Image (tube, rainbow, N blue to C red; front, side):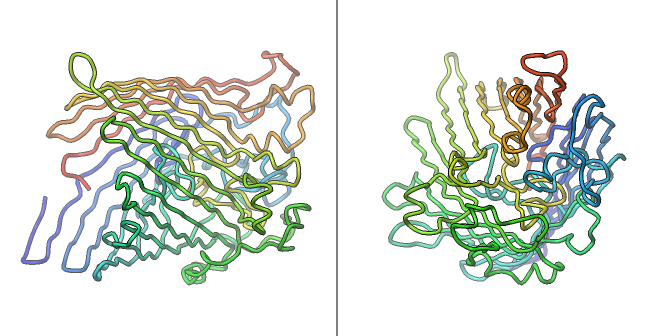
Length: 486
């Protein structure tokens, strides 16, 4: 629905609905403000948009309702380290994180049903020539990945930020250039610590992408994000230039990595992520390939990079292909893998873990969820899908695998007799499809998830399967987007 008065217009945003149901334990990826715990979780987005010359105001909050039903965090017969006082996270923290790589990622978002109102995709934007700037709470998705974006994604609730960006590409001799620059505030969850003076962190992020002139089907880009401890929201909003600063650590230089000088006993400072990405489309064959490669620290020198270019690296590789199917319709193949586990350079010097920090203890998170790749800290994932696509509907099958918290497993120091059989791995085959019409688009997805040795719970040696805890979860996902929505 739209009301127009000369150059002034108000348009209602029809409700969008997301429903996720998990039967045994939480499974939540790329759900924005909704954390999908055990039971049924719903997210409803609606609102309105006001448009005028040079100004657009969007109020699109998300209303969250989640059963967040009980599940046993840790079996009584399984070992878990004691967490120091003040970091128990009200009993919902993952105990191994504190002794390896601190991060604010609770196993469960409290013990009660969740009822929440979030600003969602709300924003205020002013356009001036080729530039746009303003305030936003919208989720950002930077990079070419379909399931994982290493720098910014919609895996966590959107965070309040100021932004400046290009409203249209800038013509350069090398091609069309686009830019996004933001500074904002990240918020701690209620399940990390009992300290009230460290509830906020700042984030400053910058991305540049170039649609190359020699081949308009090739886009390359670079993104950097710096996050830091902050006293309050006001201080966080002033750190535009942090994105250009070195994320210095206690003993800036090679000794940082040699001796791992950072310590949870002296928190305070900043940390960084950097990525290079590219997407190349081949229209004649219906294919595209994409990649994103990143590091959690810049090289100390050219020789340092030449010796160990893979130090602290992570990457995503993916492809899509779509072609005609026999008898009409199209076939679409998708494949993507993300690797965020520690690089092999740990043999020479200590390596941190993606999204965690020993200076910014809550890590690269907002309200208890990673704001980068859904694969999560120190993990890896692989995904493949095949769909049959028609104009009004599609149906397909997929299979995925994730190895969770592998950096924790590799550094905590499990006994040799149990370590090999304690990797936390999720394997999930499934079906998906959608139907499109005048009513909008209705999409559904169902997966059978087998979580092997969930949360490292193995009370016996190898290969004793009777003393380890495997959990079989069924996950349902339903999305309805009305026609003519956002």
